[in-house]
Image (cartoon, rainbow, N blue to C red; front, top):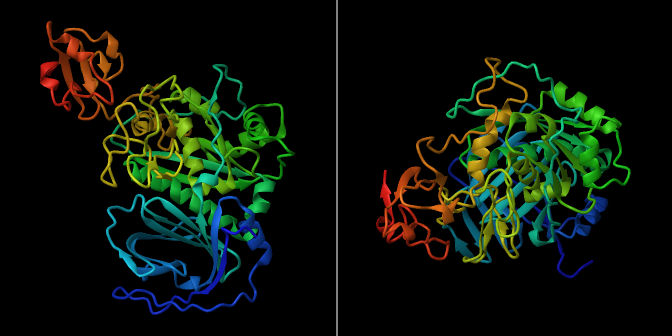
Length: 498
C-alpha cells in the first residue's frame, strides 16, 4: 500500500438528532464485515489520497435532521446545517447542507462565506449512502461499501486525468440520433426557466465498476451536482436526468470512438442512442464509460437548435463525476471553452473558463483547471463572486454563453408546444440589444471616435470620445485597465456614457 494512503476504521453512530443539537458520534476500530474488494478498488484509484471506513445509520437521513457533524478522519470534523431536503423521482433522499464550522485538530474555523465551495451533499438511494463534502473547494467523497459502511475519501484532484479537447463538429446533418424536426416549438422568453432533459447512457463496463447496488446513488449525485451548477451560476435552468444501462460493450474503444459511434447510423450504439433519446425526450445525451485515457469528451456547439439536435452528445469517465467533468462536457455542448490563453472559441469570443492563482489555495471554474487549485462547480462570470473574488472577466464569461444558448438546448424536445422557434440561433438575454458596435473589449484595435461598445460588466453603452482622446479607447489590457469604460480610473477621458 502506498505510504500516502491510509485506512482508518471508524464507527460513527448518528442519533439523537434535533433542531437544537448536533449529532452525537462514537469511534471504534472494527473492520468486521468490511467490503475488502471494494476497498482495494478505491485504494487503487490514483485520486485517492486518504481513505477512512465509517459505519453509520443512514435510515435517519431525513428532513428532521437540521444539523450534522461528519468526521472526515480522526483529525477533521465538519459541522453542517440543513439547506434543503428532497426525495427525487428515483426514490433517492437528498440532504443538502452548508458548512458552518470545521474542527481540525482542535483549531476551529467557522468563517464560511457561501455554500458554493463549502457544502455537504448526502444521498440515500437503495439503502446506501453516497455523498460529497467540499471545504473551500477541497473535495471529499462518500462511497458506499454496503448498507451500513461507507468509505470517506480525501480526493487528490491533481491526479484526475485531463478532459479531452472538445470536438469541432461538421456542418452536415449525418447524426441518426437527432429527434424529428417537425416538433412544435415555443418562442424564447429570456425570463423563463429552461427545462432541459438529460439522458445518461451507462456502458456495461462502467456499470460493473460502479456496482449495481451503488448505481442509483451515482446517478443521483450526477444529477444533483449538475443542478447545483445552475444554482451556483445563477442560471435559469431546471434539469431532469434520466438514465439507461446499455448491454453494448465498449470493446476497447476510446472516448473519441465511442462518441463517434453514439452519433452515427451504422452501428448498434448509435441506433440504441437514437431510440433511447427519443424515448426519453432527451435534449442532451451523455455516455458514462470506464476509464480509457481522458476524463471526458464533448462536442463544441454553436448554440443553434440545429447543432443541439444533431450533436448534443458527450462522454464522461464515471470517476470524473467527482471532479464535475459531466458538467464540464455539457458546458462544451452549450458553447463554452477551456482557456483563452491556449484556445479559441469559434462562436463566443468571451466563452472561456477562469482561474485565480493569486490566492492560496487557488481556484478555477468548471471549464478549466490549474495546478494546486480547487475546481468550483460553476461557470465563469465577472458578475459572480461567492468567495469575495470575481469568478471571471469580460472575456472569461462562460455563464453568458450558457445563458445565450440554454433556450435552444431546451427546445430539442419542446416541453410546452407552441409556435415556431424564435430565434433559432443564440440570443444574449443578459445583455442589451441596443445601438452598439462591439461588446468590450472585442474589436479593440478598431475603436475610433464615435465607436459604441457594450460594457458587459454593467450592461451599459459607451461611446469613444473624438480626437484628441480617441486613442485612449484602444489602450486597454487586463494588466492596464485605466481606460476600461465605466471601471478604469481614467475612463471618462476616453468614453462618454450613452
